[in-house]
Length: 303
Image 1 (tube, rainbow, N blue to C red):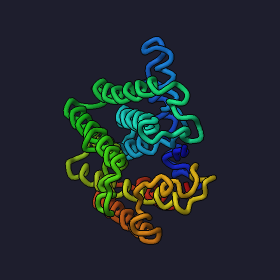
Image 2 (cartoon, rainbow, N blue to C red; image 1 turned 135 degrees about the vertical axis):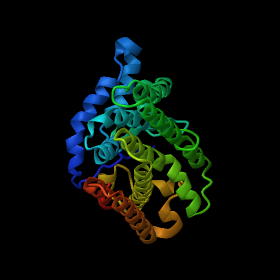
Image 3 (cartoon, rainbow, N blue to C red; image 1 turned 60 degrees about the horizontal axis):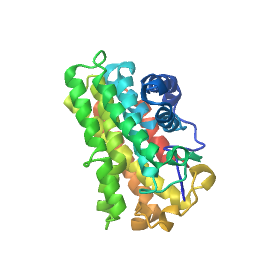
Image 4 (cartoon, rainbow, N blue to C red; image 1 turned 180 degrees about the vertical axis):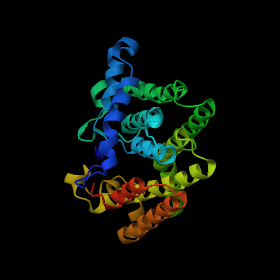
């Protein structure tokens, strides 16, 4: 079985915003997660095992940055950031299951179902998904009813049939016949939650419709650059840095950008996506240095 890589696991130095936001994100996640007295010890342990498994928190960081850029303070974005991370954690648990990708390791650790069993892993994922929406609905002190409604719709769309679930179906069916269909698959499976992350953050910060649209444009470009780079690393990456052996996508007959257009053209496509993201940030006309830095970091990562 292959080892699933982390979101961003490399030797390049993480942008400073990750360090700045990390303690706030970790504390908020811990506060929202239920204890064993509420849901039973095994379910609570299973949920916490995956949430605190060593990820870099890319999505909640994007949420907090969007909130800070629009509203001037990242703190109102914390509930939204937690909701996004709970959805991401749930998706990883389910992706690793034997009926899906059948992975034994994630981020160098046994996957959830290897520790707690398949049934508990499914239930932990289900619980994390519902917890995400509970967090949003119980955050009336931070958000207005209209903000809660907008964020709930955005997150539900990202993780449903028009987003992550639909993308996973396309991946299982392996029906990507060309680069366009592959791009649609990844826009749903990977890109949709990046889009929701920035959209929720912008909404939490009081973004206008124009600002939300520009944040979504950046998110779409970010997600595409992220996925193309990930595909390239599977071909030429150092296994010690990527956390998986080179060629695993080809061995498992996965549709990838290099498989369709080669490594060099894939690099060009990633660069084009990054430029699209930068143009969206320029139109935003706010202080976006951190979002620029994260996008450059994604292009330069080695794992």
